[in-house]
Length: 216
Image: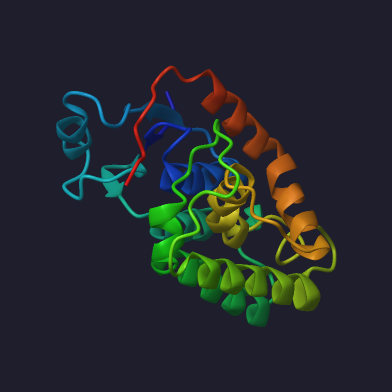
């Protein structure tokens, strides 16, 4: 059995689980996956049995529990330095951490009004106050990173890093809600959507039977 246990919520809805799962896969480590269906009887208690934070994802290894996606990414980067989870160059690595952290802590309007729902198609919905501003900032990040650091690959810093994992659920949101992008941002979004691990996650989400009412 793998020394790492990785606990996630529903693939269709749990954006933070997606972020962490892409990081674990990028790290190239073996892990045992546990999926806790969200919004079902006893789900909160089951998550709390693994972490007092009561949130997914959760990484458990060697008697240690990690319960935050970005902290999980940092742990994986430190323990698997050759996996390329952050850019190799210090200045690029610093900027990648900035944009990943901004995604981690910001964009509340987008999160609230365009929740992740990979199986659905809701073009034109979710454009509540503040969402357009969040979209503008996100696409500015994508444009700047691709322009300044995108040599060597189709992702924000060339190859796929934690920064791309952090924005992967946004790519799903933009597809679900029909957000129009310029060519540069669309090319980036397409690259994330076609990333093999992302395709595997999306395919598994399509097979999930659970339906959660996301209406706010």
